[in-house]
Length: 162
Image 1: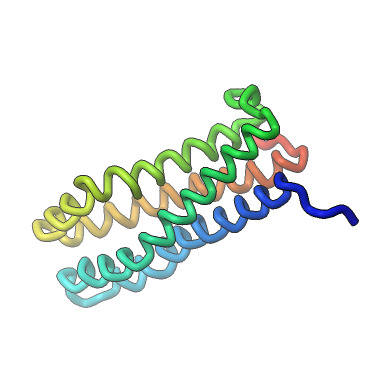
Image 2 (image 1 turned 120 degrees about the vertical axis):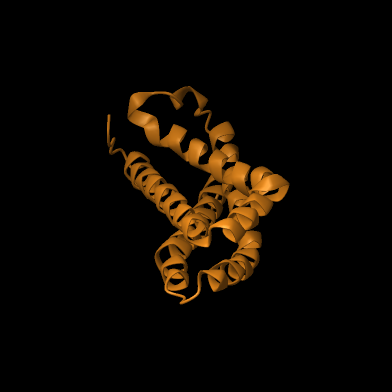
């Protein structure tokens, strides 16, 4: 058996990052949000969700950072840039797009204004705000899981959605 090279280590780090990141999104979307939506008082939902999300934010930021760095490292080392935009490798472009959306939300939009906007909207209409959050999470989770499926198949020779 040969020792692991840096690409194997990068791939492992990348996979751990994806599992923790998208797994966290799945937990928030399929477990946390449905439980919080059953709180009797809409006014209780937002503070509780805020408290949990604040604790989860560090993990989300760290895992998206690790995933992005390891992914771009592999793209660079294996010289895969030419595959971006090719129909059969749609999942590579999708991985970068999903990563970009989450990174933009976590590192730029949320700290700059999204958090305050969310609290302001929740104070005005907690029901509508919470429905928006649920819808956004389901859309992001669905797109993320389709991308993971495409990446898993595509990286092993299967080209979904050619």
